[in-house]
Amino acid sequence: MNQEELAACIQAYGRDLYSFCLQLTKNRQEADDLYQDTFLKIVEIRERMDFKCNPKGYLLSVSVNLWRNRRRKFAWRQRIAGLEIRMDDMEWELPSGEASIEEQMISREERGLVQKAVDELPEKYRMPVLLFYMEELKISEISGILRIPAGTVKSRLYKAKKTLEKRLEVVLNEKKA
Image (cartoon, rainbow, N blue to C red; front, side, top):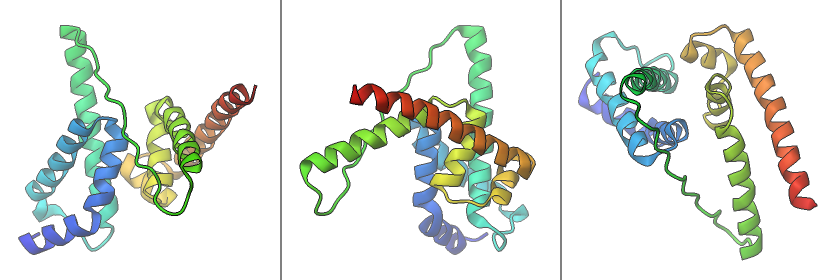
């Protein structure tokens, strides 16, 4: 991979990758670091890469693996040093267009509820949900990225949907009452 190919890759997939990193880390600073580390790793292993197959999937796979390694290292350090996890609040952008202020606020609140419910999912369910719905990847691509069978991806998506359905139903019923 030469500089032109890297620039084209960043231009084509950079925004999606950063958005995915942000959803994964739930923290802008960590998302920035993960995003940069992903491209540094790509540059490091450029000889072994084949970008003609599925470059976006490959980038997401590298990002997921780096994130898992970081979490593993952090868990190890936490056991040793007793550190606490710091989570920053997500910033949400209001939808653009002709919508009234009320509609924009309701839409923002609903997105916040869905985001919170997704964030509360265990990681093994959250990852497939983010890859399937946010990155719009196929089951086979998610299977390759997470290195699990396609049936497991389907099962985790199904369980995640059922869990989200229950959580959001409870939250929405409480709001109506």
